[in-house]
Image (cartoon, rainbow, N blue to C red; front, side):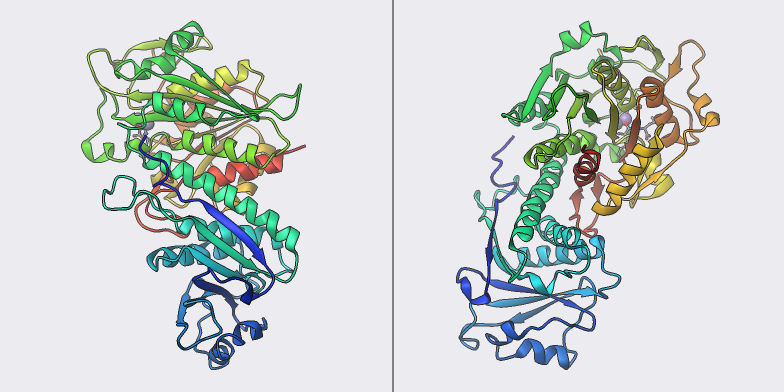
Length: 506
Ligand code: BES
Ligand code: MN
Ligand code: ZN
């Protein structure tokens, strides 16, 4: 891959007690709730009281997500170091939640980028409602700000190579220790989701299975171990469902296995990410319009790889392993044919009815591998079916499970991170649609309930290991700016997975 630097700038933060302490900041950020109760006298002292005046004359909107800019040039406001003040509308304090705050601050992030502001101060006491959920509120605000600033412009020649760091200054008179830890966490979670976005945005000619395995190897350190299995080793393990998908591609397939195991002698929760680096459909070729977004068919792997890195950085007290069976689904003389039969790692014979239903084939061998390694739970994340968008639209992730408690933890984690997961049934009627005339199972189940039959297929291999399947086909990209996601890859559900690991600790 090209230089990483141009993809993501570094985020630095500093805590300070008073507005006047810092001289290098270009803008000041204030939060404004409906029926403001916050005392802005400190800001008034450097701005000839314009803030309080504008609030009392109702010239400032507190509507959620709306941002007012006040220009404060030094010529006029001699005691102010800032050339701009941003007032972020936070709406009604009673109805403000993680999502409304994250969205509002993403708007600020976008605005700060278009105004070329990289050094920015937050009057955090005006944003944070200390009586409410301090941790989540602060986390969401900073996550939103960082995510709103995300851009992927590494292939634009006219953008200078090294972007400036993002420097934030947090002005707060209280709770220093608490603010520090939550800001550090927000940098880790937002950075993880942005790394996932960049992996998805990266085209398939520069992010092959080999490049994804190289990327993963670079994550190895004292906490994270990385193991790569080559095709011949996968062959020995009997992973023919996986290898069949890649046999039409000139790119060698790779099994990528990352582990973070702070707890000795304990089994792990496994995150499995679909890693089809490009999905042409294979011989069951996709029409060109549908193929265009298929560099993103590795969105599941992008999120699990980024999540495990963050989980290790946060030193969470839980064993997590991330597994990605990376390959490319291409048509060629050596490609798998519709009607072929392959023997999966667990011995199941699969009839390939459609080579475009390739993700579930790789997941079949992935879950078998995880089960062999004593997975105590499996979460798989996959851009699996176009039908997911038909069923639940782009605002929801389709979830499936054989374990009520685990499903609930996933849904709850998503409620906190703003990733809506909606559970769909594994009913016995749609299960029959996967029955094959000549083999144990086939890889498609017809037109009806396409998202459910795909989930049933994975369930066949998972059996009774506690498991949640997240079909993110509808969510891995957004066609326009949406809340805290900028147009392009979303990196979903990276933050959800981090929060899930947090919940499953102990
Ligand atoms: N990668 C696709 C699913 C997809 C579609 C992801 C749109 C993101 C956006 C998957 O491999 C696929 O092709 N699924 C087929 C399954 C069908 C052949 C049973 C589909 O959804 O059409
Ligand atoms: Mn496909
Ligand atoms: Zn696919």
